[in-house]
Length: 234
Image (cartoon, rainbow, N blue to C red; front, side, top):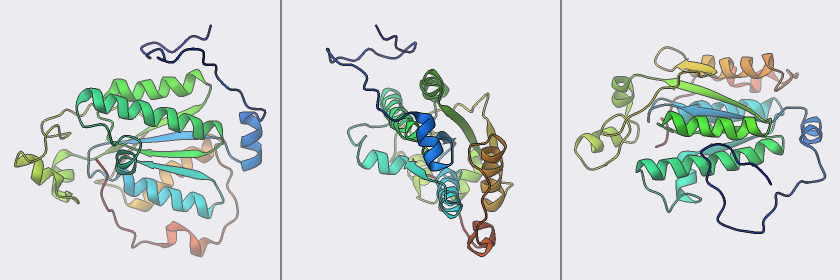
């Protein structure tokens, strides 16, 4: 009988069995000339998670690497539109995203997951889900002070939260638990967007997730210094 990871609920459905395809994960990686991995961007709203993830997606595309962007707002408009922002709903939202990310990594994709994911235990559960399947997962802490994130307030959410118009808002009336073992830490109040993207790319190359390929440097994000932050999703 298949053993499920600790703290993971048993499925309600019966008479089900995991389907193992005829193409191995290694085969998918060889086909795509990269290794599948989930890059999990966590941080306060407005810290820059989505901006970094989108810029990284563009750069990976230019390098001929296949990636998939999972962004909080898009997920809540679809797969998690039945969930709110209570602690239990946040937990279920992150669980769903973790399962989807795992499926993409098994297919060889580089998954860029941009979520506040304020609770450490929820993020750790996604890591365990990947590690149990021998899949790569890294946590990137998009570190930005509350004061700076609130100063940016690209969507006006902090202002509404301060007025009591938004409840359970992370950093105001809900906690944010910073990572204790993040694989990367990006201080977005100190680094440029180009430096942030480069830091993630360096990690991927040093860990042989991607292999440096020749590309037209004029098309690279490093040649676009006017790229601006749009703020992270909730």
